[in-house]
Image (tube, rainbow, N blue to C red; front, side, top):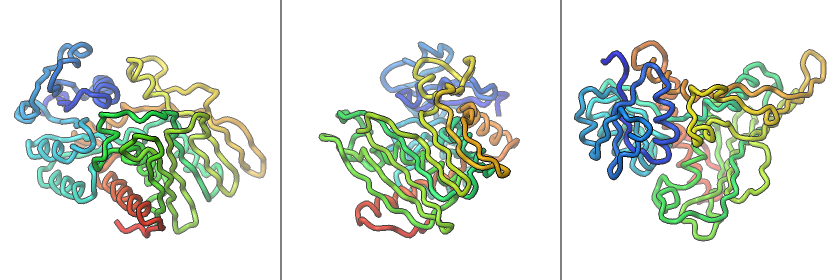
Length: 351
């Protein structure tokens, strides 16, 4: 392998341009070398050293490329990941992993056969608020968790037309797009649920894909985890609400990394991932017999840590944080949630 892991990026749309390229260049062990753009060479404006190719086959045939990052529409992930693995490349693919669990199983088996690393870009594990909640639960600051809510709300009343995210294709829609992040977070925090019940629907006129979901995960311990998203929420409520036997934690606002990336900043920018104090979560709990109420400073978000971990794993220095099997479980929960919504009943989780 080259001294630095040479990266080929498939696609320079919103995901590739915003979440991948500007973060990859900040990871010392990675070198962004090739970008596949069918119609333009827009990536060269910001990264003049890259080689832009119009045909993905040119990327696959480039023996200097070690790692391929797939940022195509979700509906096409399976094909590009499969071809990249067959070409002998390690692969990172944008979430959601695939459109169904059977495709995920096939790709996992293929990666093992090829002896290549396969990971899914579940970057929201490195959101500052999620990192903070993970530490809060680890330290049992609100006792045994009994109920929690995750909300991803926006006010976007006009459904965009002519875009794949709003098509009727499998893999489009807000549940595959945003819901898979929450499912991944819930799996990380609480493990595999016992039951799932879902209401997934279209709320906006003219929308072809689902734009609302309300999903409840039930656990054997009695824990209830609600995941919710709507495009018709003009006055935002809390993003996270957690209740436990000792107290509660409530968090407003969303991790600042996405907005910073949209503004052209990178993880090398000063103060990266730091959240404004007014958005820190509120903790109301009991510790050592004392009632404590106040703010918890949000840990810094760190999207570059995802890519660094993949690089370390490729070099054999670290365990892979986002394993394809974990991402496959989230896809299976999507399938069960869609079934629950169609049948309007609670489904037992069978993976």
